[in-house]
Image 1: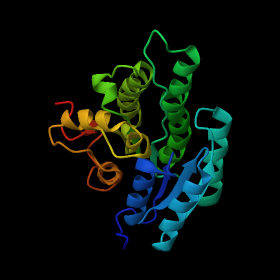
Image 2 (image 1 turned 90 degrees about the vertical axis):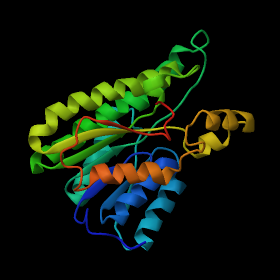
Image 3 (image 1 turned 90 degrees about the horizontal axis):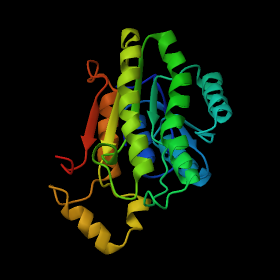
Image 4 (image 1 turned 180 degrees about the horizontal axis):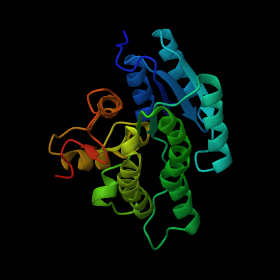
Length: 251
């Protein structure tokens, strides 16, 4: 894949980039010329694979490990990136977890686990990465949400609450950082082909696909294309927005 020059000289940090949507986002940003930091928590092999693919295509990549819900881990991660590459221009908050259950059976630990990664983790990473962007008066922050945060879903009250909270977070931070030429947006995927969704029973996959007006599941690369657009030079007047990439499922 030959890189374009749109993001040449930019440093992009993608959390949860060892597989799935995060991996596709990292590859897409690298294809536009960015040097990419691949974050992982447990899947080091996946992170190494993503980084090596970027390097094989002639771009720079490094990997960093952190539990995105722990402040000390996030601080160490951001410090490593700044010490190595001096700045962060693009932040993609992609890390996310699920712990599904009906509300009457959901434990407090299940609730906290999802909130800690899917919402608090975005706060921790954004708070620190924004400092570099403010200093250089340029930045792009893209949060990966979900249409579940807009429509809800039985058995996912914790996940839906976290992703709905991310909408308000995105809008608020967008207003704070706009005067410094920093845009903050959210991409909300629908039913996307990932390791998690591939493990669903066939009847569940068929049912979910039938609910999509386009009658097909999305691909991680289609999410990555939206993120790459928001990270680039053609989205300079877009901030505080949620872009649904979902085949029309929440129409």
